[in-house]
Amino acid sequence: DFGAGDEVIYPNPGFPIYESQIHANGAVPVPIFLREARDFAFDPAELEAALDKLVDREFIDQTEFYPDAAYMFRHPLTREVAYGTQLSATRARVHAAAAEALQALHPDQLDEQASLIAQHYETGGDTEKAIEWHSRAAAWLGFNDANASYALWQHVRDLSDKLPDCESSDAVRLTSRMMLLMHGWRIGADESDTRRNFEEGLSVAQRSGNTI
Image 1: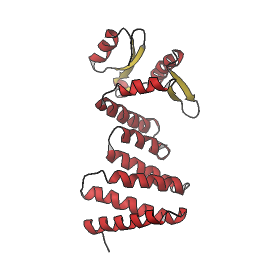
Image 2: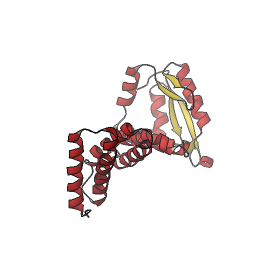
Image 3: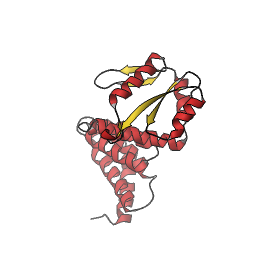
Image 4: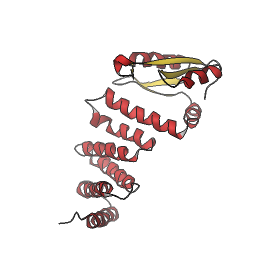
């Protein structure tokens, strides 16, 4: 939500209604220019300048400086109002854009960024992509942090049950349970969870014909 005197960041070019709505509320539009020479991606320097203005106005605080900058709303209520006033379709687009931006900004650190990318896709409602990136994060963590990897594979397992029934969905369901069984012995997984993973994995394998 915003009102008279507020400065509002918006993409330009974008939908013309963005700027007109900002003016209609007496606010000041702060464009982030998407230039053709950059394939209509934003300029990080311009985004940084816009974020600096929001910091100066005490809407947000910079919480991390190195190796990457991170920001958060100064007041929790501001965050809830800003997030809650977005339509669900808008939130989905915002989270998808954030996930794609992370991939573009960190092409050499996709494993490290995988969990955050997955969270954006999941929050935006894209379960299939969320599973893809959660799985990547789990596989990467498996080399150094078995407990964290196991927890992510549990999450992938639970998300996979929300997918429509089809061959590719069964492949994800089977993979997640196999990975849980493989990592379970390393961390001393709960016996009931191990039994669940085995029985559910066997059921999926039999249904999809992936048995030996």
